[in-house]
View 1: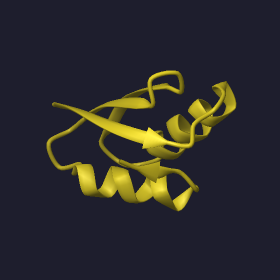
View 2: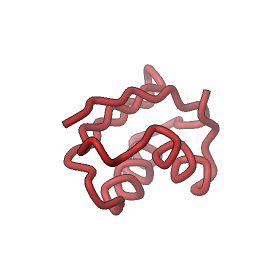
View 3: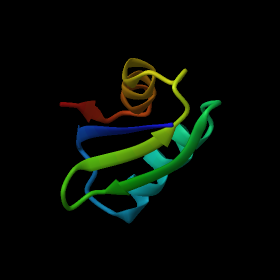
Length: 67
C-alpha cells in the first residue's frame, strides 16, 4: 500500500474536494482519498500498482491542475 500526495490547483470548495475524491475512488486499487481545498493537497492511499501519473491524469481530466 502506497500513500501518494499530489498538490492540486483549482480546488476552491468542498464540492471540488468531492469531485476529486469521487474521480480517484473510481480507479482500481485506490483505497482512500483525502482532498483538502484549503491546502491544495490530495492524499491517496492505493495499492502498489497505482501510479502517481495515473492519479494526476485523472485529476487533470476533471479540470484541475496538478502542480
